[in-house]
Amino acid sequence: MILTETNTKELLNDLDWDFAGSKSETIHSLHPYPAKFISDIPRTLINILPIPKNTLILDPFCGSGVTLIEAQKAGINSLGVDLNPIACLLSRVKTQPLPVNFLSTAEKIFEKCNSYRGNISIPNIPNLDHWFKKDIQVGLAILLKNINSVSEGSVSDALKFCVSSIIVKVSNQDSDTRYAAIENTWGKKDVFALFLQVAQKLQKAKDSFLYSTASSVLNKNSLLLKKTDLPQKIGLVITSPPYPNAYEYWLYHKYRMWWLGYDPINVKEQEIGARAHYFKKNHQTEFDFMDQMDSLFTFLSAGCANEAFICFVIGRSKIHGRIIENENIIAEIGEKKGLKHITTIERTIKSSRKSFNLSHARIKEEFIVILQK
Ligand SMILES: C[S@@+](CC[C@H](N)C(=O)[O-])C[C@H]1O[C@@H](n2cnc3c(N)ncnc32)[C@H](O)[C@@H]1O
Image (cartoon, rainbow, N blue to C red):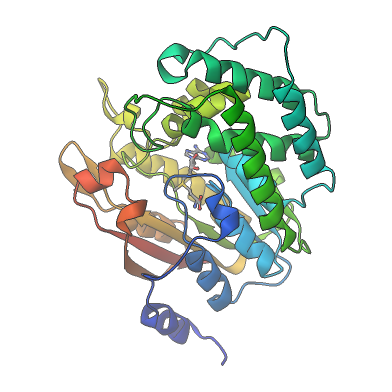
């Protein structure tokens, strides 16, 4: 079938976008990430939308890299951008081939950690004793000392992915989404064993991947993207932006960042939508969000090839009691930049994907806004 503007719109509107029975693939379930895409969303958009030749797929808020994996499966080059270094670590590890010596290196590190008898210095991390038992602090410090001595970048990234995935589990934090301290029964040796288990699972999950297309990941504030950051013109944008008062990605990954040597406070300051910006004197409002999206769309519309598509998956926000229709903000900004608004599709958010803030505001749906250059 030749796709025209009218039948593309019909095709998009006729699909069931709830994907109620969808299951997360192993590669995406090895490390938690808040508000992660279900793979069906980017996969369906990539399958339906006619993408201009010799272009790439861009996700300017790539998070855990779901769009990038779907682009790889479809044989299309991709670029992911995210401010959060944990997001970039996950996206890099998922999209790059796993070096052949990865698992043997993880096994050697496991052995070395178990027989480590020397002193170890514990990093200076705020409030560490509240969230990590002394024994766990020692375990994590020994593990990271060994990992930091690995010089090969892609092996080191994959090893850090494995540590990052267990940090909340071995802490006193109740769960990834509950910031209450609980009594934790893990010990130092469990830290090493859990690390090795994730390494084995990662190896198994990666065995079935083929890497025929180029995928790169940029750790950058998307509002500062420049033309020179794009190796090719954009043919399709698939993204789910952060939006006011929904999630706090920096907070979710705060201790992962501290342990891996990144600066969560710098991430917090630049993170779009972070609750902290909406709950202080002279707090931000939806107008700040509009300005941020306006500047992003200036970059996107210039970087897109003619007839490229831009798809934003976005929910509504509640700011000091007012519901903000972010989907309309995106559609209006797109049109202001000369893009065609093809359609806006409504879908139900699975309750397991909802943040505390969204549940609290009784927000049950999100929208897929589709624009074309
Ligand atoms: C809804 S999540 C994306 C989830 C992603 N679709 C996935 O499947 O994992 C939004 C992302 O925007 C990122 N982010 C927030 N502010 C940013 C900024 N100024 N520049 C780039 N990324 C930012 C957050 O770190 C987070 O990973």
